[in-house]
Image 1 (cartoon, one colour):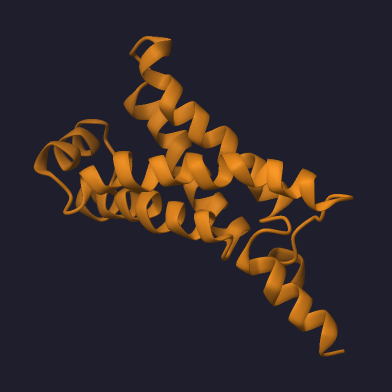
Image 2 (cartoon, rainbow, N blue to C red; image 1 turned 135 degrees about the horizontal axis):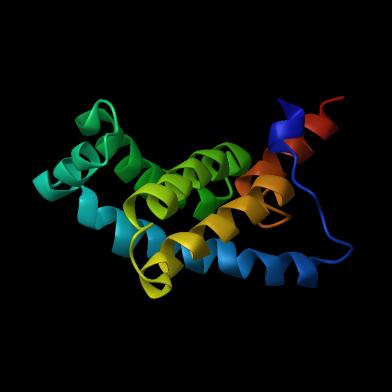
Length: 143
């Protein structure tokens, strides 16, 4: 569990602060402007997922919406960063390759941007500016 929680720390706090900007701002936009529009899950979203052949479209529509809102909020806080980033990556891959595949690149860019953010923090973790860092620091001090 420590490997999942403990973030990679940069050599100085400025680098960590700079790297926290896309996590905080990007995931704020994801949670508030993209995810909140899907809570409660609208009928059009369920119908879109059903048309794509996604099994259990109501369940997976809720999973996608919660991934964006809850996962985005967790990434903002740097709490369970890698776990939230994994689920968000899965959601964005479905959005790109199933929902937006036949659309122009311009319509795919939001999902692609959120995928890039999620993949980056899946590897990096929260950095120094996240709750994961405080948890990892407390674990290290308790040894």
